[in-house]
Image 1 (cartoon, rainbow, N blue to C red):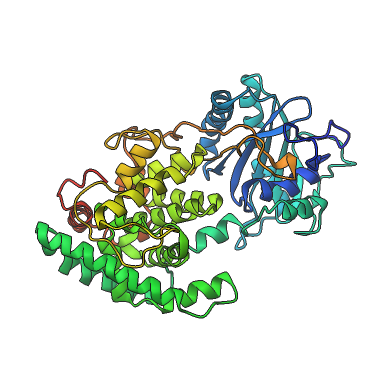
Image 2: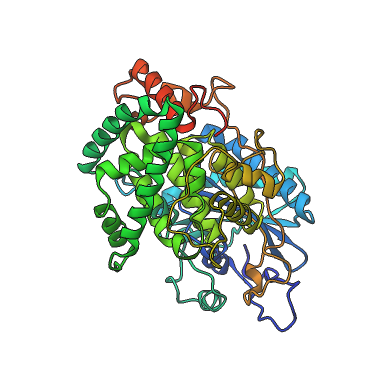
Length: 509
């Protein structure tokens, strides 16, 4: 991109709002973390532009496929997603900005320059795919290891072969304006995912043994309807006690210390009981009621801690706590964290319906208050008493059969409880638009159209089969028994379906 190109500004906000224009690739690279809410490592990011001044519109993100053979299909589908999604929600884009963000492998001998050259064919495929839809790519940037390169500008005076150094975080005019606007950068995507990743330390073996022991004791109980209800009550009662324990703990200084403190406050047996109990749909739906007021912060800490305990062959169990973490984050206004948690939930279990519904609703820019209202009303009806003004209730409700979060989502957002609405899948995320006229001082960061891509379906050798159902498509750590035994895995999955729903077929998640 030539430094003298028309500046990328914005319009549509009140005239007295401060305006900020992005004049060159350095400004665009510096703006990316504020556009997304985090540093999108190992990602393709595409941003739609509208109007003569290039107002920012919808955005989408996808993890960079490891196999270059998938790049042509990915490029075509992402271009279609961004253009068609923008048209559904507003005007057709007048241009697109592409970012390819990937750092060198710390264990390899490659440099940022090598990464840039390796991704050049992907950048060209994206430019071609967008051009085929009559929407030009005005700039394509590679961001790697603190440097950026332009794939569009041939002028070595402004875009040298060795790249340009990014401004130090928080030192640019854009960073100051974004801080004034209340926009936050939550670190890198890799760091955000690490807070929710299963343990990879010696204690993981003890946690897996506790889960196995708890599962052996739980399966006979959930086959009996009365005992299943009692398991649900015990799970919610234990969750309430652990939340109080977390809430009363002294504050930690950093995220790593805070997570370590939370881990230390939950025993292996408690984590196992909670994880297994939350596989029941009704119990999970009751737990979703801890989404606001003083309940929200300790609940989010608990769901994150439980996600980290889904070790070994219990990786699929993470779908429940990850979905609850995503729901609380979305309910409290942290949409980037919500998308990360919900994306990981779908990675753990692509068919987890509650995660699908929340992921789609969040990406469509819907208001979570509609679902919060449904959950408040259901809790009030169940408990037969008015809620506190802020909706806070420490005492858990009794998980009797009836409507829950899934049905509340369907009723609040007008989708069928038994059917599915189209989800993004495969790590594709869309960033919805702000409300019209939202008071955001940095007008260039005010998108005007949400993007809702259709499901991304990479080419596979066996169409119609999900990789999670094929042993060769699963990491060794997620195989049923760690050594490729499918018999043990089938028995465990059957037990998990029963424990989740109380029915052997595992339907109606």
